[in-house]
Length: 250
Image (cartoon, rainbow, N blue to C red; front, top):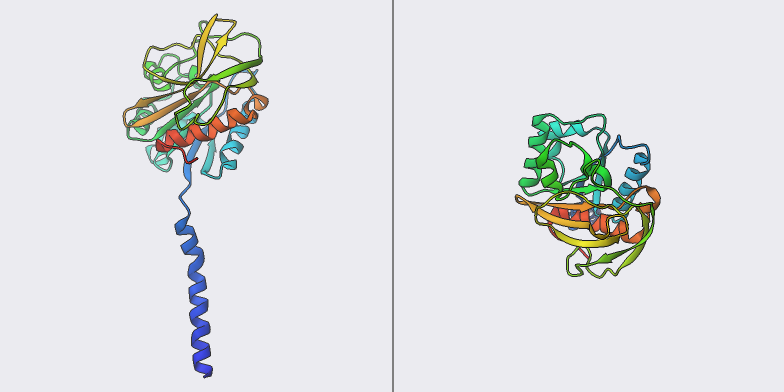
């Protein structure tokens, strides 16, 4: 009898030891995001901006986020293989152009089926690299692009069927309203707003396909305050997820 009790107890211990593994197997793997930040103009508190963005992603419980403050990580094809999506939010003033291998790696990363999420002034990086502008869909060009005074404006959700903006309504935000971003490629505009500075409606959140991969361009995010807007945080979390996977789990 004692032998039987011992065997049953042992079986219970063994079964319990497998429960955490079974639970882990049932949980969906988190999206691996590489957030590239650093540098920027003096008006942008980039550490605050990157940390607020990182927290928005982590709060969604769908991401494993790693932060790098050097765009030269793009030189390592091996390093990039560890990620599903690149969150690019560095306006690289210090490094005017990344090496050819880094350029190739970034483009191949997205062309191969992964994601690229670019935010605010980051599109102004690498001014002489035309293909980077095409990857971003629209690009900030110094001396041409601009904005009026930072303030409250209404953003209009123009595509309510897209997974990123599904269920969202127009919202007000306190931010810079970017205008005259340059580019002619086809984009799918999700959110726009009328600019008093440019006297026209400007795309602020949009998507495009790049090879087998996806780009999401988010022009919101002048500082931590702007990025704390709940609607902007929703766009970030959903946008990075869609860029990585092509879908959003509601």
